[in-house]
Length: 440
Ligand code: ASP
Image 1: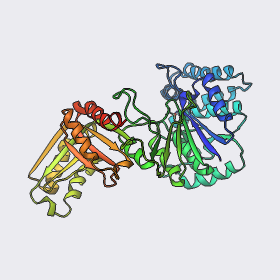
Image 2: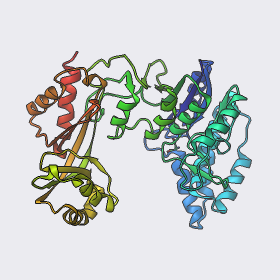
Image 3: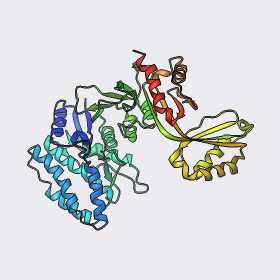
Image 4: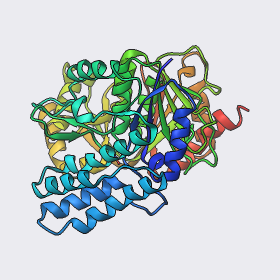
């Protein structure tokens, strides 16, 4: 049995958190490869080291004095080193960082130093080998996307020779050696890549919550946790905004069928959530989770005999594509087709899109509605349970929520419901109550 363990910024924010992390790693010999984030917030209005680095680099780029800002970052690490009574010095590292900032080495380089330095400190504390992610994680030159093949070749070879290692999260290198980062929260992706390359049995992702919750705790008081969720279910939920894990972190491990276990550094006894490829384990409730987002617009296009006009859907969508707008959902009727888009993306281009639709399909009418919310009710159990949609809609009707749109995914894994923004919270509570509270 071997595992990759990734620790988020709040798990490594100070010396006390480092001690918890070390005891988790030492408590299980199979925790062989460790991927750290940069130190996160120590208290609620603290600033993450990554943000301090971005700000510091911006000063350097504007030709302003950045040394004081760099000193603040240096003290964050020194506090950790002193708190852990380590003998190491980061003096030389900070000299190099200062030189690189003066040379304007780039914002990605700057941000990556958070993970890089934390990796050095953690490796020294654990007595593990330190592997600079720049030497094992690669991006392509053309469009800067992750180079899966080269990474796998180099990284798996490197890990073969290593019993234990710390590989900092969030960054890698371009073919010319420059540093590039993933998007924010990207250490989750590094963890997944390392798990794939090492071919481990489990990817543990340690954070500050005990896994996923069935619904947003800002809307539902004390919601139940999710014990097991499939990758596909999670995709449906995370894409609606339930982000504990970076969306892109799923793909590398999913390819290899490696499960992800989300765990809580501050409550290591909790089992957390298991994210798996497939499972015969039924979820406790018919639904696995509910997630949603406000701020959508619907654009309904009406035309008699639409259903027999070949290419109608494609032409309508091309009016959105021309303006660089992606769509979320597209339910249709016999003579109508509705496209759901993000309001903030759509607003400034509204008239251009409408003109485009007129030009392409000569509709009878176009109706636009704004301030809508979409709610995804997701669950692998829905496929084999009759009456799920019926229960959702009677719960919503009882709560006086007007349902504007219903869209059941063809996989029968999700039902998407469109409501007015103002009904969003009420609708989520009604669905949670009917499936979770009254199911007990
Ligand atoms: N430190 C980076 C961030 O704050 C990456 C990460 O934590 O995953 O986004």
